[in-house]
Length: 164
Image 1 (cartoon, rainbow, N blue to C red):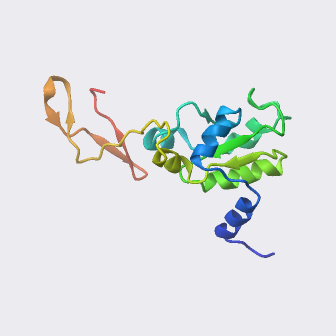
Image 2: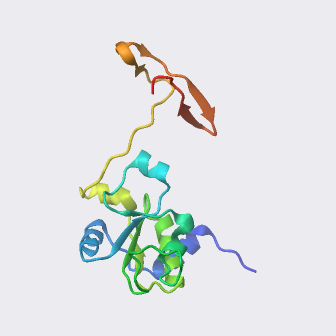
């Protein structure tokens, strides 16, 4: 059995797609295409999002978008429904769109450049929140600055301040 690199798989997936830019995606969305953000909730909160998109994480995508699935979303009415997937920069969405084409969604594609390209094009975009670092002071009740307590968990920090 021969193996492929992820770059080869990505090139093959994209060769089957009619990828769209941010303005084309917005126009298709206005005309009835589903614009679906496939990123995890935490990434959307952190990096920002396109207001009004459907949110379907990658791990349930095929079940929610297959028109024959009992778990499909109501907006998915046929295999011909135009679907535009969005991720951060357009890599995961390309692979996901190719997977949707394999289950018969002939008009599945993705946003070239992801939400990064959408925001750069000046289209409506809700900015994410910037995570606070351990060195950043916080202000609590009464205006007293202090450094909140943090607990390290898998290279991320979880805020455990008793005031929040």
